[in-house]
Every structure is written in C-alpha cells, then in structure tokens.
Amino acid sequence: MTNNNMQNKGMKIIDKDELIYLAGFIDGDGSLIAQMVRRHDYKFKYQIKCTVQITQLKKRRHFLEKIQESIGYGIIRDRGTISDYVLVEPKCVYWLLKQLSPFLRLKKKQADLIIRIIEQLTSSKNSAVLFVQLCRLTDQVALLNDSKSRTITAEVVETTLRELGLI
View 1: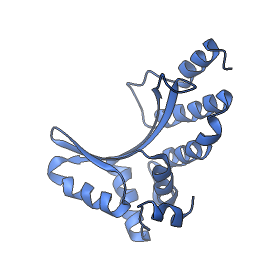
View 2: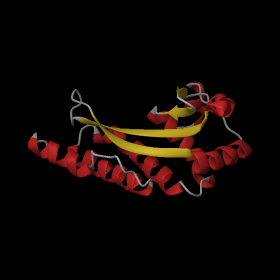
View 3: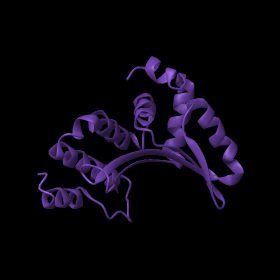
View 4: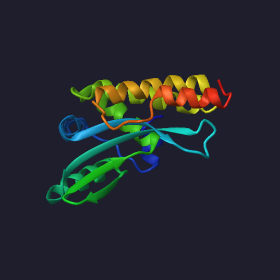
C-alpha cells in the first residue's frame, strides 16, 4: 500500500509535524484496538476488526473534526458528553499507523501489532490456522490495552473452528 494509492482513495499526505501531533494525541486520548467480532455469515464465524479511536469531550469536537479533515477518512460520533473520531477501514488504519508508528511512544506496540494483523488479513481468509494466529496477535493488543470486558479471545475462536472441523 503506497501513499499514492491511499491518497487516491481520499486519504491525504500528512506532513511530519502533523504526524507528530496526531501521535501525541493518540498516545494521550486515543485507543488502538484490535478485537474479534462474532459474524455468523463469515467463513470462520469471526472478523478481526482494527480501530483507531480518539475521544474528546463534545465541547472539543472541533479538534476531532480537524483530525478527520487532516486524515481524510473516518467518522465522528457523539455519545452523551463525549465525541469519538473512529477509523475502522483496514486499509486506512494500516496507512495511518504505518505513518504514525515512528512517532508513537505509549501505543507503539499496539500500532505495530495491528499493522502485522492487517498485513496478513487477506491471507488468513483461506487459512483457519493463520486466522487463529492473527487472533492471538489480537489478544496481545487487548492485553496491552488492559481490556476488561473482552469475552471473545483467540481460544474461543480456535474452539469454534475446531468444533466446525475447520482446524
């Protein structure tokens, strides 16, 4: 995935100063999330979903709007007194994290794991074994994030795939 390919899809080239600013924002008020989501219509019954999310009080929504404008993708959603900028399209998450990774400090490990996951997502569509390996990487991201409410783990996915005779 090159910058030109992503730029043609609506993402903009982000200069170094902006990347440093975004990395600081994400390190402080952001989340880099990888999770397994149950999808009954999927071959392996689960989807790996990777998300970049930045949260602010609704009164500071304008910061999120500037970030959205700077990246060229993502949505802003409001929840009570909170606003979230959310980016979930895998190609966009990958493109952004590849650029941000050198500047991240607190969330660099999560970013690098998510990059690895996205790089292998397409290959995993035909391999239950590889899919479970990516689920294990997803578990590592969750551990780094101190996730507490997670119920779907690589072990749950692997058990399901074994019951279905896929591994």
